[in-house]
Length: 328
Image (cartoon, rainbow, N blue to C red; front, side):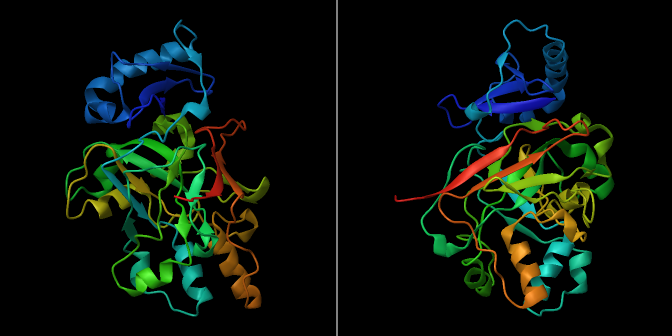
């Protein structure tokens, strides 16, 4: 299934069932008004929704309308939990190498995580408002999953069954604010503003054979100001899969339905695939020549993040945003 949340003037939007080709959509208030409501009763409501989804794809729903990505909020406009990992240890290794630091061996066995703000996600076509270019504005192209209720202490093996939906993410970072925050020894806060998610969230079966071992085996394509920036494969060089990430986060506490878990920046050892954030490209420049030459984002710059199936058809719709000056 494919699901979206239209902006209806309410905080949590209106749940929309979207056709596989993203051409049509229909509201389903008789089943659930919001995506959170659906997730709270997934086992009960999902079979009913699946019947409607099949009918929508077969062109049998007279009340279907053209799907409009511009009307979309984040699939979960606000969430009870947003925890972002760093599953691509290659990316972490580059960060440390660029500043001449060794990487602890535990980074290969114990995932990194930060707990992000989940009360003000940015819509996939909305501007990214920030007050200063001096903050070092960066995008991070990622994948995220949404869970149902996850018990504390869930195993890697059992965690996979709790993955109900997948989305794309732009995990906006303010690179020049990060060092001072981390130096305090208490993690990110100001340096991680509101994140953005794709117009559509999809169930894992929509990915077919490209969903294996709790990984998405497809390139994630990023364009910066209309130019291809990178298309690393999300299934390659992913040290920790989503089941392992869930098990890590749920080690000491349960997760409520609607918890979002991010993969961290997609990164491949094959540098020809490009990168999924400006910081990584800058790190590679430092390693190669001793100096970063690629600037961070300026007001007016745009970023587009998208994933395509084997036939070249968009799966989640596109995150397509502009950085603008926030004047309060």
